[in-house]
Amino acid sequence: MALVMAVLLTVSGCGLGSGSTVPLMVGPGSITPASGLEGVRITVGSKEYTEQVILGYILEFTLMAAGAEVRDLTGIVGSRSTREAQLRGQVDVAYEFTGNAWINYLGHEKPIPNAREQFEAVRDEDLERNDMVWLDPAPMDDTYALAASKAVVERTGVRTLSQYADLVRTNPAAAKTCVDTEFRARQDGFPGMAAAYGFDPARAQTPILQVGIIYQATADGRQCDFGEVFTTDGRIAALDLTVLTDDKQFFAHYNPSVTMKRSFFEAHPEIAEVTAPRHRGTDERGDHRDEQAGRRRRARSRGGRARLDGRRRVRHRALTCANPIESDIGHRSGVGDLSRTNSGLPPSLVVRFQ
Picture 1 (spheres, rainbow, N blue to C red):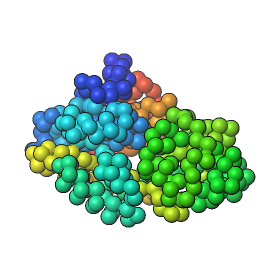
Picture 2 (tube, helix red, strand yellow):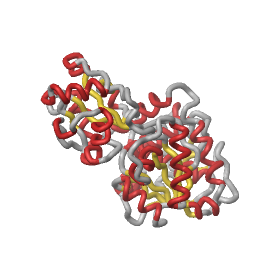
Picture 3 (cartoon, rainbow, N blue to C red):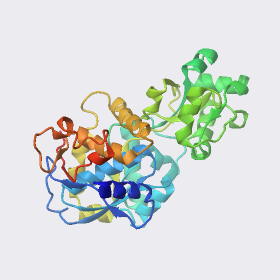
Picture 4 (cartoon, rainbow, N blue to C red):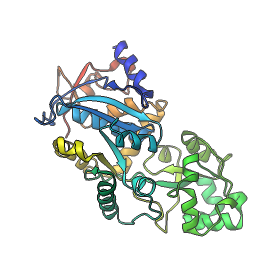
C-alpha cells in the first residue's frame, strides 16, 4: 500500500513528462469492456488545476473499465500546453471547456449566450479548422466570475458586475480586485469584462496572486475587495463568498466535453458511447454545481490533492473493491474510502456507475 501511495503522489506533477500508468487498477462494472477499446493504448491528459484533474481521472477510470490500456498525462501546466499536446498527438483524449476553446483557441471575442449553441459552434468550427472532435458536453458550467466577502458586499452595495463597474469608475480604491496572470490578460477574462461593462481596466487595482490564494485573500478582505473565482469551486461556499451576478452575460459557458483528434475518434468511435453515461450522470441527482463544488472543496481541504478527490468522486458513484465482502464495502469498511487514510487505498477497484 505504501508503494501504491508513493506512485500516486509521484505522478501528481507529471506535466508533459513520459507519463505513467494509472496507479489504481480498475475493472468493469456497469461499464463493460468494449470490443473496440480492449487493449487499446490511450493517453489521457488534463490541465493542472483541481477541476481538470478530477475530470481527467474520471475519464481514465471509465476507459480502463472499458478495457483500454490508459497512460496518465494529467496535470499539464496551462491551457495552451494541453491543447498543443493534443494537436501533436502526445495526448489522445482530454476534457476541454467550450468557452475556453471558442475564445482562446478559435479566436472569437464574444461568447454565445446559449450553452448548447455555444457547444455546437465550437464543435463545428474546431472540427473544420483543426480536425478536433467534441463529444456531447456535460451540464456543469465552470465559468469565471468575480466574488466578494459578505462584509465587502454590505459596505459597497455591489452585487452585480454592472455595480462593480460603477464602483471602479467612481471609487477605484474600494474595488481592489485580485486576479491571476492569465485572467488579467485573457479576452474572456478581465480586459474583455471591462470592455463589456464599460470601464477602463487600468483604473482598477488588480494585484496578481496565484489562483489558489485568491479565495482566502478575498474572504479576508485585506489584499482584495473582490477576487477572480471559478463558479464550481467549493471554496466559494466554504468561505461564504458572494458571486457577483454577470448581468450582461459576458462570461462564456464552460461546459466540459471529451475531445480528441478526428483520426483517433474514427479509429475508436466506441469512446462516445462509453463516456456518454458519465455525462448524463453528472446532473441527474440535484444541483450538479453543488456536487462538483463539494468535490473541489474536499480536494482543497486536503491540501489540493486532487487525485485523491478524483478517486473519491468515482467511488461516490458506487465503486467497490475487486474482492467485495459486501456491495457497499467502501462505505462500511473504509477500504475504498480515500478521505479516511492514506493507507486505505484498495489494490484494485470495480467501476459500478449508478
